[in-house]
Length: 107
Image 1 (tube, rainbow, N blue to C red):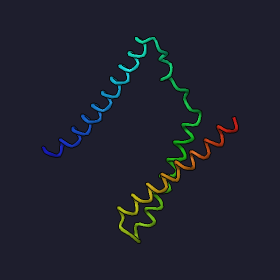
Image 2: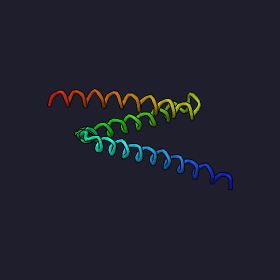
Image 3: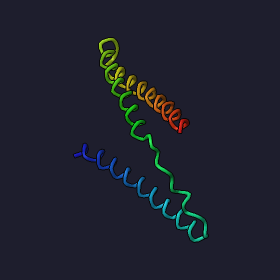
Image 4: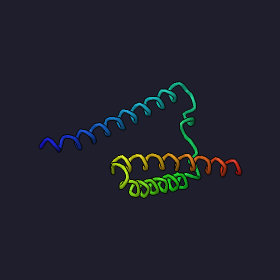
C-alpha cells in the first residue's frame, strides 16, 4: 500500500507545477493586455532544427548506453551506465548546439 504513494505524489507534484506555471502565465498575459501592452512578445518562432537537436541528443544517449554496457565489466554497473549516459548526452547537446548554430549562421 505504501508503494503506491510515490507515483501518486510524483504525478500530483508534476500537475501542481504545471498548473501554477499555466495560471501564472495567463495572469501575466491578461495584465499586459489590460495595460494596453503588446502581448505578442510571448510568441516565439519555432526553431527549424528541433528534430536535429533531439536526434543528436538521443544518439549521444545511445552511445552512452553502449559505452556504459562496455564499461560495466570494469567498474560498478550502475556507475558505468549513469556516468556514460550523462557524459555522452552532454556531448550530444554540445554537438547539437554547434551544428544548429552553424546551420543558422549559414541562413
